[in-house]
Image (cartoon, rainbow, N blue to C red):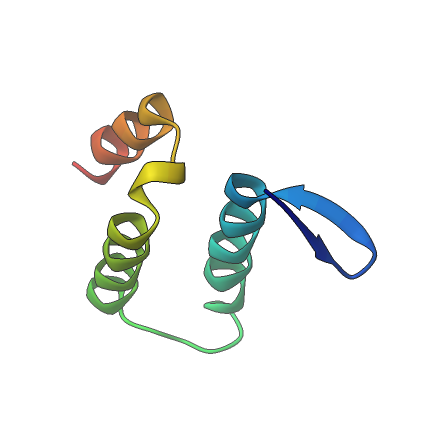
Amino acid sequence: MMINYQGEDFTETEFYGREILEAIQLTNKFPISKKKLTSSLEKMIHEQFDLIDKEELEDYIKAKK
């Protein structure tokens, strides 16, 4: 399924990945604790688990440790 966002077409995975990256970038403008950010990311990952590339998820888990 394709999602059209601001005139561009994205796959669901690309769209949600972009949303996650934008949220991370905004943390510099709106300070948030690392614990809260990590918790939010893990919730998003759980909600979108079927759309996430498993290798990328493993990379995230390794980086988190």
